[in-house]
Length: 196
Length: 196
DNA sequence: GAAACTAACTAACAGTAGTTAGTTTTTTGA
DNA sequence: TCAAAAAACTAACTACTGTTAGTTAGTTTC
Image (cartoon, rainbow over all chains, first blue to last red):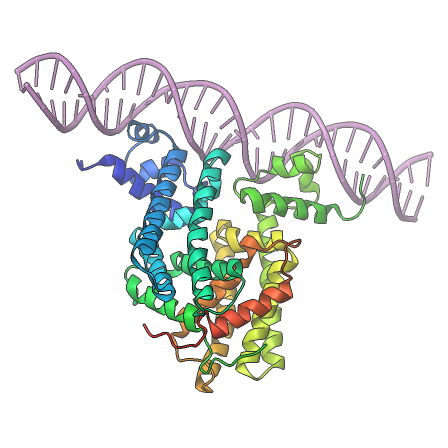
């Protein structure tokens, strides 16, 4: 039997199952079965099913926070800032796809107390992102737009990456970040003259 | 007791609950309770819980299909086509937010047979959308991009609308469609000169 | 006014959920 | 090699799941 960190194995297996079948649809017996053990044995290593979800969510949330803080520390140009924020975001999402997928989709299944704590952190993250947009506008390099709207549109295209990204696919995380940055900054129009 | 179409009331109530708590997390007793009745009574009006989900999904899928067909029938200019496709998509999503939200998030809980049927329809819808992008490229009005990538990015920002749209908010579906179209076509850059 | 229909009810079933208690086996470390 | 610790096991519990069966009260139809 494999020695190295059984707890990590449990997390890995659980998240892989939850990504496919969802949190509620993945039972402790499913997780145990995938590890050739019985469900109660899991409790020698973890404290509860919800804790699997909670620890995953805080881990990913922490990675996002670390990323945006770094961006704001290092860069000054708004375009560069935005590009790097996108890059970090994509890196977090693609680094552990099972975990990020579960984070993006299943956080709502946490009990309200924990869920609320997560919402606070998400709002803070979004505010930092929005700050970059505001800076770009005030410096005249971004179009004047509804910040909140632009932010939601940007984050949606970033987060959707968990739906289709495959580690063995033909785009690397770095390429995805490049393309997304270009798309977000320049859009689809060739001559930038669309008027509605 | 209210006469008019109990079945509709059940769908409406069920979808409202499922939007908040998710499909698996909403029990028949929850739905019944919200209607001041007992769970078994629901079965005088509907055939199963899964049928609630299935009928909702096919209804929304049908609305999307109708929209894209209309666009391709009426318009010729790729920019106009894309704009109208976006407009229809947003209209479908916002018209019955509970239903679209459940559609976007919970279709995976259908049994595989039904789920597969839905995937086929989604792929067809995406192909029609991608066709518009391809036309725009070949006519030289859209930048040459990875079609599949551009499509995913566009659809993600459209679908994310169900996360934040509120009927009593300060943007109408039509305004959302306008802003999204502009954002997708022109991006964020003021002078369209970003190079990575 | 009897028959049929509608829509609610109670009781209950078979299955599954997460988890605990208590016990046994396996591994570790001196 | 032997005691301690870690990690597995079996049995079981309580709670809840979607659903069926059988029944009943109220309304509509002929």
